[in-house]
Length: 181
Image (cartoon, rainbow, N blue to C red; front, top):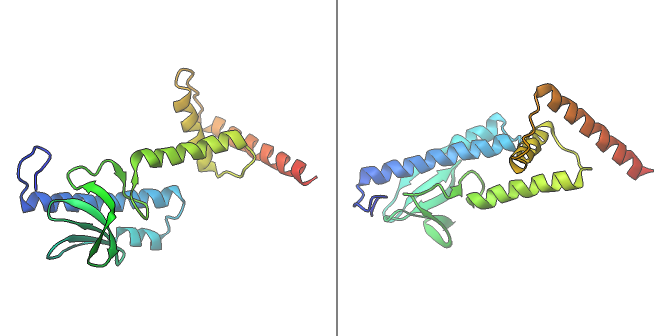
């Protein structure tokens, strides 16, 4: 297998890349759990429980006792169809370049797709308005607005954000009351 320079990769280099992928799976899974406020000790322990197993044909990466990925000798990353069987329809690139995917979900998502989902959520929040949002969602929307309106930068300190959040909550309560009447 060749490395990113086109040179033949040693088993040590391959092992280090697989270990780096396992570490990436752990950190991105923890990131997702924190984003979704699912970061209890039990979930975090499950996220950290990643094991690399070297087999005859494939190297397997398991998370919390379940098969997650299988890596061929030439470094191609696949999902698992059944233990010991790769899922050729779920190909996730090569271990020499794992940056194109977010590895923290049930299945890896391309980075662009994940950002698109987050942007679509922000668009929905901005356009619909009358939905219940958590305080952290407000910060996400503000960050998104700041990026979208980069020519007219919006700078809010913590007190301004608290006021914005309180105003938003009042607006949602008023809209909900009007819908009930």
